[in-house]
Image (tube, rainbow, N blue to C red; front, side):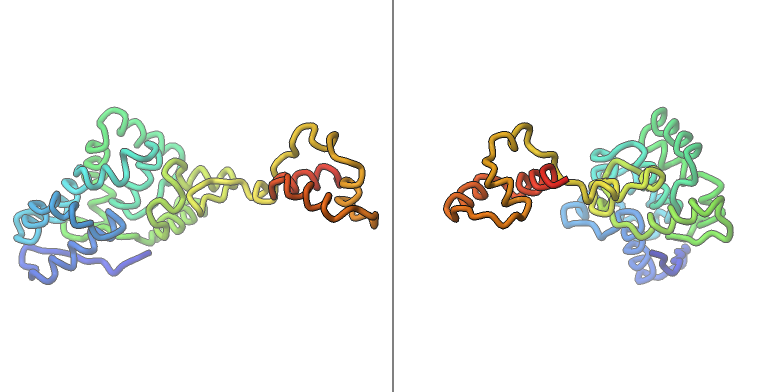
Length: 245
């Protein structure tokens, strides 16, 4: 989701700095900090509101804090972490696999703090946000490809955890997966049934098989209820699919 850019200068008012602080948290943490996290970030917030540090310095320390790392690094895959860092600090998605590999090497060699510093010190960051503007989801005048536009569009509207902590959008789109619930599935799998239990049909009476086929055949009600009650809903569906296919 795009926001109106907020810039903070040395002469900005306290109200403006507080608004910028909220916007930073919305962009980087995708929420406002919890009470215990506020205590961890207390000194950093105080320095920012007192104009002792600027936007980029605040971002660097926030990104290297246990609050950010606990939320986005320790519980996720490396490539998902890279994707989120680009979203949080550059306002866009990964462009391609080459960029993913590049930042993967940075993360492997320099760690999470090194990756975040690389993004904040980049020419792209300088051109997009300068030294005073809070990072935000941004629409580029020109995208590398339709895929780059799609990935950025989807990612900037994705709340943390919505599509899981492992597979970047760049990959799950290519594989045709649906990861909206946080668990990736192929669309065709949504209609798949559990396989039937091995050999179970061999132990069912003919009368029960006839019932599954829908034949009009007399059958003792008590027997039907007993047979049906012995199967789980998944077993019934799987059994019916196996017999009637």
